[in-house]
Image (cartoon, rainbow, N blue to C red):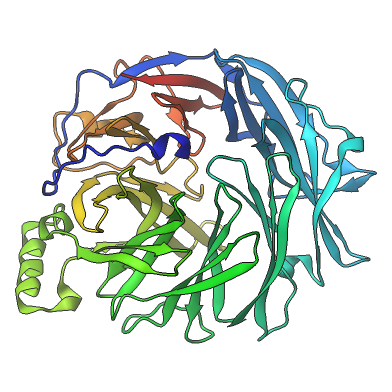
Length: 531
Protein backbone atom coordinates (compact mmCIF):
# COMPACT_ATOMS: atom_id res chain seq x y z
CA UNK A 1 0.00 0.00 0.00
CA UNK A 2 2.94 2.34 0.65
CA UNK A 3 3.36 2.74 -3.09
CA UNK A 4 0.25 4.88 -3.01
CA UNK A 5 0.58 6.32 0.48
CA UNK A 6 3.86 8.19 -0.06
CA UNK A 7 2.17 10.52 -2.52
CA UNK A 8 -0.18 11.60 0.29
CA UNK A 9 -1.21 15.11 -0.23
CA UNK A 10 -0.06 18.55 0.70
CA UNK A 11 -3.56 19.95 0.67
CA UNK A 12 -4.38 19.58 4.37
CA UNK A 13 -5.16 23.02 5.78
CA UNK A 14 -4.84 24.04 9.41
CA UNK A 15 -8.12 23.90 11.31
CA UNK A 16 -9.30 22.74 14.67
CA UNK A 17 -10.72 19.26 15.15
CA UNK A 18 -13.76 18.50 13.02
CA UNK A 19 -16.11 15.66 13.87
CA UNK A 20 -19.20 15.62 11.70
CA UNK A 21 -21.04 12.37 11.10
CA UNK A 22 -23.75 12.13 8.49
CA UNK A 23 -25.08 9.40 6.29
CA UNK A 24 -24.46 10.09 2.61
CA UNK A 25 -26.82 9.03 -0.13
CA UNK A 26 -24.13 8.26 -2.67
CA UNK A 27 -21.12 5.99 -2.34
CA UNK A 28 -17.66 7.44 -3.01
CA UNK A 29 -17.10 4.82 -5.71
CA UNK A 30 -18.42 1.87 -7.68
CA UNK A 31 -18.26 -1.78 -6.61
CA UNK A 32 -17.82 -4.59 -9.11
CA UNK A 33 -18.18 -8.07 -7.64
CA UNK A 34 -16.47 -11.24 -8.74
CA UNK A 35 -18.12 -14.65 -8.74
CA UNK A 36 -19.52 -16.26 -5.61
CA UNK A 37 -17.32 -19.14 -4.42
CA UNK A 38 -17.34 -21.79 -1.69
CA UNK A 39 -14.52 -22.08 0.82
CA UNK A 40 -13.09 -25.56 1.38
CA UNK A 41 -14.19 -26.85 4.78
CA UNK A 42 -12.06 -25.63 7.67
CA UNK A 43 -10.01 -23.15 5.63
CA UNK A 44 -9.71 -19.38 5.70
CA UNK A 45 -8.42 -16.88 3.17
CA UNK A 46 -5.43 -15.60 5.15
CA UNK A 47 -4.02 -12.76 3.07
CA UNK A 48 -3.66 -11.13 -0.32
CA UNK A 49 -0.15 -12.05 -1.43
CA UNK A 50 0.12 -9.84 -4.50
CA UNK A 51 -1.94 -7.95 -7.04
CA UNK A 52 -0.60 -7.11 -10.51
CA UNK A 53 -1.73 -6.52 -14.10
CA UNK A 54 -2.64 -10.19 -14.60
CA UNK A 55 -4.67 -10.62 -11.41
CA UNK A 56 -4.10 -11.50 -7.79
CA UNK A 57 -2.61 -14.25 -5.62
CA UNK A 58 -4.14 -15.21 -2.28
CA UNK A 59 -3.05 -17.47 0.56
CA UNK A 60 -5.49 -19.97 2.07
CA UNK A 61 -4.63 -21.95 5.19
CA UNK A 62 -6.05 -24.76 7.29
CA UNK A 63 -5.01 -25.58 10.87
CA UNK A 64 -2.00 -23.30 10.52
CA UNK A 65 -1.48 -23.24 14.30
CA UNK A 66 -1.02 -27.04 14.35
CA UNK A 67 2.30 -27.89 12.64
CA UNK A 68 1.33 -31.55 12.28
CA UNK A 69 -1.92 -30.78 10.45
CA UNK A 70 -1.19 -27.44 8.77
CA UNK A 71 -2.14 -27.19 5.09
CA UNK A 72 -1.42 -24.31 2.74
CA UNK A 73 -3.05 -23.38 -0.58
CA UNK A 74 -2.25 -20.72 -3.18
CA UNK A 75 -5.09 -19.28 -5.25
CA UNK A 76 -4.74 -17.31 -8.48
CA UNK A 77 -7.50 -14.98 -9.69
CA UNK A 78 -7.75 -13.07 -12.96
CA UNK A 79 -8.47 -9.33 -13.19
CA UNK A 80 -12.20 -10.04 -13.10
CA UNK A 81 -11.67 -11.84 -9.77
CA UNK A 82 -12.50 -15.25 -11.19
CA UNK A 83 -10.68 -18.14 -9.55
CA UNK A 84 -8.36 -19.64 -12.18
CA UNK A 85 -6.21 -21.99 -10.13
CA UNK A 86 -6.04 -23.36 -6.58
CA UNK A 87 -3.08 -25.46 -5.56
CA UNK A 88 -2.14 -27.09 -2.27
CA UNK A 89 1.54 -26.57 -1.42
CA UNK A 90 3.42 -29.61 -0.16
CA UNK A 91 5.18 -28.91 3.15
CA UNK A 92 7.01 -32.23 3.38
CA UNK A 93 10.53 -32.56 2.01
CA UNK A 94 12.16 -36.00 1.81
CA UNK A 95 9.35 -37.28 4.06
CA UNK A 96 10.13 -34.71 6.75
CA UNK A 97 7.63 -32.11 7.91
CA UNK A 98 8.58 -28.48 7.52
CA UNK A 99 7.06 -25.51 9.32
CA UNK A 100 5.25 -23.05 7.08
CA UNK A 101 6.68 -19.53 7.41
CA UNK A 102 5.13 -17.49 4.59
CA UNK A 103 4.46 -17.05 0.87
CA UNK A 104 5.79 -13.80 -0.58
CA UNK A 105 5.92 -12.07 -3.96
CA UNK A 106 9.50 -10.85 -4.41
CA UNK A 107 11.09 -9.52 -7.58
CA UNK A 108 8.04 -10.56 -9.63
CA UNK A 109 8.25 -14.16 -8.37
CA UNK A 110 6.27 -16.18 -5.83
CA UNK A 111 8.33 -17.88 -3.11
CA UNK A 112 7.47 -20.42 -0.45
CA UNK A 113 9.37 -19.96 2.81
CA UNK A 114 9.58 -22.87 5.22
CA UNK A 115 11.77 -23.87 8.17
CA UNK A 116 12.92 -27.19 9.59
CA UNK A 117 14.19 -27.88 13.10
CA UNK A 118 16.88 -30.56 13.14
CA UNK A 119 16.80 -31.78 16.72
CA UNK A 120 19.85 -34.02 16.29
CA UNK A 121 22.06 -31.18 15.05
CA UNK A 122 20.23 -28.59 17.18
CA UNK A 123 19.79 -26.28 14.21
CA UNK A 124 16.86 -24.52 12.63
CA UNK A 125 17.00 -24.00 8.84
CA UNK A 126 15.12 -21.54 6.65
CA UNK A 127 14.40 -22.54 3.03
CA UNK A 128 13.04 -20.79 -0.03
CA UNK A 129 11.44 -22.35 -3.08
CA UNK A 130 10.07 -20.75 -6.20
CA UNK A 131 6.37 -21.21 -6.87
CA UNK A 132 5.50 -21.10 -10.57
CA UNK A 133 3.37 -18.01 -11.11
CA UNK A 134 1.01 -19.79 -13.51
CA UNK A 135 0.79 -23.42 -12.34
CA UNK A 136 1.38 -22.61 -8.64
CA UNK A 137 3.65 -25.62 -8.21
CA UNK A 138 7.01 -26.06 -6.51
CA UNK A 139 9.96 -28.28 -7.34
CA UNK A 140 12.08 -30.11 -4.77
CA UNK A 141 15.10 -29.44 -7.00
CA UNK A 142 14.64 -25.72 -6.44
CA UNK A 143 14.86 -25.75 -2.63
CA UNK A 144 17.61 -23.53 -1.21
CA UNK A 145 18.65 -22.82 2.37
CA UNK A 146 18.84 -19.08 3.07
CA UNK A 147 19.33 -19.10 6.83
CA UNK A 148 20.23 -21.24 9.80
CA UNK A 149 20.59 -20.79 13.53
CA UNK A 150 21.84 -22.92 16.38
CA UNK A 151 19.17 -23.94 18.85
CA UNK A 152 18.91 -25.81 22.08
CA UNK A 153 15.16 -25.60 22.26
CA UNK A 154 13.15 -24.35 19.29
CA UNK A 155 10.29 -23.24 21.57
CA UNK A 156 12.66 -20.99 23.48
CA UNK A 157 14.96 -19.75 20.74
CA UNK A 158 12.22 -18.94 18.24
CA UNK A 159 12.38 -18.83 14.48
CA UNK A 160 12.65 -16.38 11.60
CA UNK A 161 10.96 -13.09 10.77
CA UNK A 162 10.88 -11.59 7.29
CA UNK A 163 10.37 -7.96 6.26
CA UNK A 164 10.27 -6.48 2.75
CA UNK A 165 11.28 -2.94 1.85
CA UNK A 166 8.66 -0.43 0.76
CA UNK A 167 9.42 -1.01 -2.95
CA UNK A 168 9.72 -4.81 -2.33
CA UNK A 169 13.25 -4.81 -3.85
CA UNK A 170 14.92 -5.84 -0.56
CA UNK A 171 14.12 -8.59 1.91
CA UNK A 172 15.44 -8.81 5.44
CA UNK A 173 15.58 -12.07 7.42
CA UNK A 174 15.81 -11.55 11.17
CA UNK A 175 16.19 -14.15 13.88
CA UNK A 176 17.26 -14.24 17.48
CA UNK A 177 20.39 -16.21 18.28
CA UNK A 178 20.61 -18.61 21.24
CA UNK A 179 21.29 -16.96 24.56
CA UNK A 180 21.73 -17.70 28.23
CA UNK A 181 19.77 -16.05 30.98
CA UNK A 182 21.28 -12.70 31.86
CA UNK A 183 23.42 -12.44 28.71
CA UNK A 184 23.26 -9.69 26.07
CA UNK A 185 20.61 -9.93 23.34
CA UNK A 186 21.99 -11.57 20.18
CA UNK A 187 20.45 -11.77 16.73
CA UNK A 188 21.38 -12.16 13.07
CA UNK A 189 20.44 -9.98 10.10
CA UNK A 190 20.53 -11.03 6.44
CA UNK A 191 19.51 -8.76 3.57
CA UNK A 192 18.68 -10.03 0.06
CA UNK A 193 18.09 -8.21 -3.22
CA UNK A 194 15.13 -8.77 -5.55
CA UNK A 195 16.75 -11.85 -7.12
CA UNK A 196 17.27 -13.34 -3.64
CA UNK A 197 21.06 -12.86 -3.74
CA UNK A 198 22.48 -12.00 -0.34
CA UNK A 199 23.67 -8.39 -0.07
CA UNK A 200 25.04 -8.58 3.47
CA UNK A 201 24.67 -10.37 6.79
CA UNK A 202 25.71 -9.55 10.32
CA UNK A 203 25.63 -11.10 13.78
CA UNK A 204 24.55 -8.47 16.32
CA UNK A 205 25.30 -8.50 20.04
CA UNK A 206 23.61 -5.75 22.03
CA UNK A 207 25.10 -4.24 25.19
CA UNK A 208 21.90 -5.06 27.09
CA UNK A 209 20.81 -7.95 29.23
CA UNK A 210 18.17 -9.94 27.31
CA UNK A 211 15.91 -9.85 30.37
CA UNK A 212 15.49 -6.07 30.15
CA UNK A 213 15.54 -5.48 26.38
CA UNK A 214 13.12 -6.53 23.66
CA UNK A 215 12.95 -5.77 19.93
CA UNK A 216 9.49 -4.50 18.91
CA UNK A 217 9.82 -3.50 15.24
CA UNK A 218 12.32 -3.83 12.39
CA UNK A 219 12.45 -2.42 8.89
CA UNK A 220 14.65 -2.50 5.79
CA UNK A 221 14.70 0.43 3.37
CA UNK A 222 15.02 0.44 -0.43
CA UNK A 223 18.82 0.69 -0.16
CA UNK A 224 19.14 -2.35 2.11
CA UNK A 225 19.75 -0.47 5.40
CA UNK A 226 18.18 -2.03 8.50
CA UNK A 227 16.51 -0.27 11.44
CA UNK A 228 15.37 -1.83 14.72
CA UNK A 229 13.14 -0.38 17.41
CA UNK A 230 13.47 -1.82 20.91
CA UNK A 231 12.42 -1.15 24.50
CA UNK A 232 14.94 -1.06 27.37
CA UNK A 233 13.45 -1.59 30.84
CA UNK A 234 15.00 -0.47 34.08
CA UNK A 235 14.35 -3.83 35.75
CA UNK A 236 13.63 -7.43 34.84
CA UNK A 237 9.88 -7.17 35.39
CA UNK A 238 9.37 -5.57 31.96
CA UNK A 239 6.24 -3.92 33.32
CA UNK A 240 5.04 -0.45 32.47
CA UNK A 241 3.95 1.14 35.70
CA UNK A 242 2.17 4.25 36.80
CA UNK A 243 4.49 6.88 38.20
CA UNK A 244 7.71 7.71 36.41
CA UNK A 245 8.48 5.84 33.17
CA UNK A 246 10.60 2.73 33.87
CA UNK A 247 11.53 2.12 30.24
CA UNK A 248 12.80 3.92 27.17
CA UNK A 249 12.69 3.32 23.43
CA UNK A 250 15.91 2.74 21.52
CA UNK A 251 16.42 2.84 17.73
CA UNK A 252 19.33 0.86 16.27
CA UNK A 253 20.50 1.49 12.70
CA UNK A 254 22.71 -0.70 10.49
CA UNK A 255 23.73 1.09 7.31
CA UNK A 256 26.38 0.75 4.59
CA UNK A 257 25.92 -3.01 4.25
CA UNK A 258 25.79 -3.39 8.02
CA UNK A 259 29.27 -1.94 8.56
CA UNK A 260 28.01 1.21 10.30
CA UNK A 261 25.95 0.80 13.48
CA UNK A 262 24.38 3.58 15.54
CA UNK A 263 22.12 3.76 18.56
CA UNK A 264 19.57 6.46 19.48
CA UNK A 265 17.95 6.64 22.91
CA UNK A 266 14.52 8.25 22.77
CA UNK A 267 13.44 10.35 25.74
CA UNK A 268 10.52 12.71 26.31
CA UNK A 269 11.34 14.35 29.63
CA UNK A 270 8.97 13.08 32.35
CA UNK A 271 6.22 11.96 29.97
CA UNK A 272 5.31 8.37 29.16
CA UNK A 273 5.96 7.35 25.57
CA UNK A 274 3.07 4.95 25.12
CA UNK A 275 3.67 4.09 21.45
CA UNK A 276 6.40 4.78 18.92
CA UNK A 277 7.02 3.88 15.30
CA UNK A 278 9.26 5.13 12.51
CA UNK A 279 9.71 5.15 8.73
CA UNK A 280 12.77 5.77 6.52
CA UNK A 281 11.96 8.75 4.28
CA UNK A 282 14.32 7.87 1.40
CA UNK A 283 16.50 10.94 2.11
CA UNK A 284 18.72 9.47 4.80
CA UNK A 285 16.34 10.40 7.63
CA UNK A 286 14.14 8.42 9.97
CA UNK A 287 10.75 10.00 10.64
CA UNK A 288 9.61 9.04 14.13
CA UNK A 289 6.29 9.70 15.81
CA UNK A 290 3.95 8.30 18.40
CA UNK A 291 1.73 8.99 21.40
CA UNK A 292 2.56 10.14 24.91
CA UNK A 293 0.77 10.34 28.24
CA UNK A 294 1.21 12.37 31.41
CA UNK A 295 -0.63 9.80 33.48
CA UNK A 296 0.58 6.28 32.67
CA UNK A 297 1.05 3.77 29.88
CA UNK A 298 -2.56 2.91 29.07
CA UNK A 299 -3.79 6.31 27.92
CA UNK A 300 -2.63 9.06 25.55
CA UNK A 301 -2.59 12.84 25.93
CA UNK A 302 -0.96 13.90 22.66
CA UNK A 303 1.62 13.18 19.98
CA UNK A 304 5.34 13.72 19.57
CA UNK A 305 7.42 13.89 16.41
CA UNK A 306 11.11 14.07 15.45
CA UNK A 307 13.57 13.16 12.71
CA UNK A 308 16.94 11.42 12.84
CA UNK A 309 19.64 12.10 10.24
CA UNK A 310 21.36 8.72 10.00
CA UNK A 311 24.50 10.30 8.47
CA UNK A 312 25.11 13.08 11.00
CA UNK A 313 23.23 11.42 13.92
CA UNK A 314 21.37 14.71 14.41
CA UNK A 315 17.89 14.59 15.97
CA UNK A 316 15.81 17.51 14.71
CA UNK A 317 12.23 18.79 14.24
CA UNK A 318 11.46 17.62 17.76
CA UNK A 319 7.98 18.56 18.86
CA UNK A 320 5.33 17.29 21.26
CA UNK A 321 1.77 18.55 21.35
CA UNK A 322 -1.24 17.71 23.48
CA UNK A 323 -4.58 17.08 21.80
CA UNK A 324 -7.18 19.81 22.11
CA UNK A 325 -9.49 19.53 25.10
CA UNK A 326 -12.53 19.21 22.84
CA UNK A 327 -10.91 16.31 20.98
CA UNK A 328 -10.12 14.46 24.23
CA UNK A 329 -13.62 14.95 25.64
CA UNK A 330 -15.71 14.73 22.46
CA UNK A 331 -17.68 11.65 23.55
CA UNK A 332 -17.75 12.20 27.33
CA UNK A 333 -20.91 13.02 29.26
CA UNK A 334 -21.39 16.62 30.34
CA UNK A 335 -20.55 15.73 33.96
CA UNK A 336 -17.30 13.98 33.03
CA UNK A 337 -16.40 16.81 30.67
CA UNK A 338 -16.94 19.34 33.46
CA UNK A 339 -14.76 17.37 35.89
CA UNK A 340 -12.03 17.11 33.24
CA UNK A 341 -12.22 20.88 32.69
CA UNK A 342 -11.83 21.50 36.42
CA UNK A 343 -8.77 19.21 36.48
CA UNK A 344 -7.33 21.10 33.52
CA UNK A 345 -7.70 24.45 35.31
CA UNK A 346 -6.21 23.17 38.59
CA UNK A 347 -3.34 21.29 36.92
CA UNK A 348 -4.45 17.93 38.36
CA UNK A 349 -2.70 15.63 35.86
CA UNK A 350 -4.22 12.42 37.22
CA UNK A 351 -7.77 13.64 36.53
CA UNK A 352 -7.21 15.42 33.22
CA UNK A 353 -8.80 13.95 30.11
CA UNK A 354 -6.84 11.35 28.14
CA UNK A 355 -7.76 8.66 25.60
CA UNK A 356 -7.49 5.05 26.74
CA UNK A 357 -6.00 1.94 25.12
CA UNK A 358 -5.21 3.40 21.71
CA UNK A 359 -2.67 1.52 19.57
CA UNK A 360 -0.63 3.18 16.85
CA UNK A 361 -1.32 1.37 13.57
CA UNK A 362 0.16 3.49 10.81
CA UNK A 363 2.67 6.28 10.27
CA UNK A 364 2.15 7.66 6.76
CA UNK A 365 4.67 10.10 5.31
CA UNK A 366 3.33 13.16 3.51
CA UNK A 367 5.22 14.39 0.48
CA UNK A 368 5.93 17.75 2.15
CA UNK A 369 7.70 16.14 5.12
CA UNK A 370 4.66 15.98 7.36
CA UNK A 371 3.02 12.78 8.53
CA UNK A 372 -0.28 11.15 9.31
CA UNK A 373 -0.84 8.97 12.38
CA UNK A 374 -3.62 6.37 12.41
CA UNK A 375 -4.58 4.74 15.70
CA UNK A 376 -7.35 2.50 16.98
CA UNK A 377 -8.67 1.77 20.44
CA UNK A 378 -7.89 -1.88 21.11
CA UNK A 379 -7.96 -4.02 24.23
CA UNK A 380 -8.89 -7.53 25.34
CA UNK A 381 -11.09 -8.17 28.36
CA UNK A 382 -10.82 -11.55 30.10
CA UNK A 383 -13.87 -12.95 31.92
CA UNK A 384 -13.17 -15.88 34.27
CA UNK A 385 -16.13 -17.69 35.81
CA UNK A 386 -17.57 -21.09 36.72
CA UNK A 387 -20.10 -22.66 34.37
CA UNK A 388 -22.77 -23.92 36.77
CA UNK A 389 -24.17 -26.27 34.15
CA UNK A 390 -20.93 -28.23 33.87
CA UNK A 391 -19.07 -27.26 37.05
CA UNK A 392 -15.98 -26.36 35.03
CA UNK A 393 -14.13 -23.07 35.16
CA UNK A 394 -14.23 -21.09 31.95
CA UNK A 395 -12.41 -18.14 30.42
CA UNK A 396 -13.94 -15.91 27.78
CA UNK A 397 -11.97 -13.28 25.90
CA UNK A 398 -13.74 -10.19 24.58
CA UNK A 399 -11.91 -8.38 21.79
CA UNK A 400 -12.59 -4.64 21.59
CA UNK A 401 -11.76 -2.72 18.41
CA UNK A 402 -13.24 0.72 18.81
CA UNK A 403 -12.71 4.32 17.69
CA UNK A 404 -10.24 5.27 14.96
CA UNK A 405 -8.19 8.45 15.41
CA UNK A 406 -6.36 10.31 12.65
CA UNK A 407 -3.71 12.93 13.46
CA UNK A 408 -2.36 15.16 10.70
CA UNK A 409 1.12 16.51 11.57
CA UNK A 410 2.97 19.39 9.95
CA UNK A 411 6.63 18.98 8.87
CA UNK A 412 7.58 20.91 12.03
CA UNK A 413 5.88 18.29 14.21
CA UNK A 414 2.87 20.40 15.19
CA UNK A 415 -0.64 18.98 15.02
CA UNK A 416 -2.51 20.36 12.03
CA UNK A 417 -5.76 18.62 12.92
CA UNK A 418 -7.03 15.52 14.68
CA UNK A 419 -10.21 13.56 13.97
CA UNK A 420 -11.89 10.74 15.84
CA UNK A 421 -14.26 8.29 14.13
CA UNK A 422 -16.65 6.50 16.55
CA UNK A 423 -16.66 2.73 16.06
CA UNK A 424 -17.65 -0.14 18.35
CA UNK A 425 -16.66 -3.75 17.65
CA UNK A 426 -16.87 -6.27 20.50
CA UNK A 427 -16.59 -10.00 19.77
CA UNK A 428 -15.94 -13.03 21.94
CA UNK A 429 -13.25 -15.73 21.62
CA UNK A 430 -12.53 -15.04 17.95
CA UNK A 431 -9.31 -13.03 18.07
CA UNK A 432 -11.06 -10.12 16.36
CA UNK A 433 -11.41 -12.10 13.13
CA UNK A 434 -13.93 -9.68 11.59
CA UNK A 435 -12.88 -6.56 13.49
CA UNK A 436 -10.65 -3.52 12.89
CA UNK A 437 -10.61 -1.72 9.51
CA UNK A 438 -9.16 -1.57 6.01
CA UNK A 439 -7.81 1.70 4.66
CA UNK A 440 -7.17 3.37 1.30
CA UNK A 441 -5.77 6.80 0.44
CA UNK A 442 -7.06 8.38 -2.76
CA UNK A 443 -5.76 11.83 -3.67
CA UNK A 444 -6.66 14.09 -0.70
CA UNK A 445 -9.08 11.67 0.98
CA UNK A 446 -8.80 8.67 3.29
CA UNK A 447 -11.28 5.80 3.26
CA UNK A 448 -11.96 3.28 6.04
CA UNK A 449 -14.01 0.10 5.58
CA UNK A 450 -15.19 -1.91 8.59
CA UNK A 451 -18.03 -4.05 9.90
CA UNK A 452 -20.72 -2.12 11.72
CA UNK A 453 -24.14 -2.57 13.31
CA UNK A 454 -26.97 -1.63 10.96
CA UNK A 455 -28.86 0.00 13.87
CA UNK A 456 -26.29 2.81 13.69
CA UNK A 457 -27.94 3.90 10.45
CA UNK A 458 -31.44 4.16 11.89
CA UNK A 459 -33.16 7.47 12.58
CA UNK A 460 -32.55 7.08 16.33
CA UNK A 461 -28.85 7.90 16.81
CA UNK A 462 -28.71 8.59 20.53
CA UNK A 463 -26.23 5.74 21.06
CA UNK A 464 -23.61 3.76 19.19
CA UNK A 465 -24.37 0.05 18.83
CA UNK A 466 -21.71 -2.65 18.93
CA UNK A 467 -20.82 -4.81 15.99
CA UNK A 468 -20.80 -8.32 17.49
CA UNK A 469 -21.56 -10.50 14.47
CA UNK A 470 -25.29 -9.80 14.52
CA UNK A 471 -27.22 -7.06 12.69
CA UNK A 472 -24.08 -6.58 10.65
CA UNK A 473 -23.50 -4.14 7.84
CA UNK A 474 -20.32 -3.00 6.10
CA UNK A 475 -19.61 0.73 6.54
CA UNK A 476 -17.35 3.06 4.61
CA UNK A 477 -16.01 6.33 6.04
CA UNK A 478 -14.66 9.13 3.85
CA UNK A 479 -12.28 11.61 5.53
CA UNK A 480 -11.70 14.83 3.61
CA UNK A 481 -8.61 17.06 3.50
CA UNK A 482 -9.81 19.14 6.46
CA UNK A 483 -10.48 16.17 8.76
CA UNK A 484 -14.25 16.20 8.33
CA UNK A 485 -15.85 12.85 7.59
CA UNK A 486 -19.01 11.10 6.50
CA UNK A 487 -20.14 7.50 6.90
CA UNK A 488 -22.42 5.34 4.75
CA UNK A 489 -23.31 1.67 4.20
CA UNK A 490 -21.00 0.19 1.58
CA UNK A 491 -23.94 -1.83 0.26
CA UNK A 492 -26.78 0.71 0.66
CA UNK A 493 -29.51 -1.36 -0.91
CA UNK A 494 -28.76 -4.44 1.23
CA UNK A 495 -28.49 -6.40 -2.02
CA UNK A 496 -25.23 -8.00 -0.89
CA UNK A 497 -25.44 -10.09 2.28
CA UNK A 498 -21.79 -10.29 3.32
CA UNK A 499 -19.49 -9.51 6.20
CA UNK A 500 -16.00 -8.26 5.39
CA UNK A 501 -12.57 -9.33 6.60
CA UNK A 502 -10.62 -6.06 6.91
CA UNK A 503 -7.27 -7.84 7.26
CA UNK A 504 -7.71 -9.32 3.74
CA UNK A 505 -8.89 -6.11 2.04
CA UNK A 506 -6.13 -4.11 0.41
CA UNK A 507 -5.50 -0.99 -1.66
CA UNK A 508 -4.36 -2.29 -5.05
CA UNK A 509 -4.25 0.86 -7.17
CA UNK A 510 -4.26 4.63 -6.93
CA UNK A 511 -8.07 4.62 -6.93
CA UNK A 512 -8.85 0.98 -6.30
CA UNK A 513 -9.41 -1.20 -3.25
CA UNK A 514 -9.80 -4.97 -3.13
CA UNK A 515 -12.73 -5.87 -0.86
CA UNK A 516 -13.28 -9.34 0.58
CA UNK A 517 -16.63 -10.55 1.91
CA UNK A 518 -17.99 -13.86 3.20
CA UNK A 519 -21.16 -15.37 4.61
CA UNK A 520 -21.04 -18.90 5.95
CA UNK A 521 -18.90 -20.90 3.52
CA UNK A 522 -19.56 -18.51 0.64
CA UNK A 523 -17.16 -15.69 -0.22
CA UNK A 524 -16.72 -13.05 -2.90
CA UNK A 525 -14.08 -10.54 -3.94
CA UNK A 526 -14.80 -7.10 -5.32
CA UNK A 527 -13.10 -4.07 -6.82
CA UNK A 528 -14.07 -0.81 -5.14
CA UNK A 529 -13.20 1.91 -7.67
CA UNK A 530 -13.19 5.34 -6.01
CA UNK A 531 -14.48 8.39 -7.85
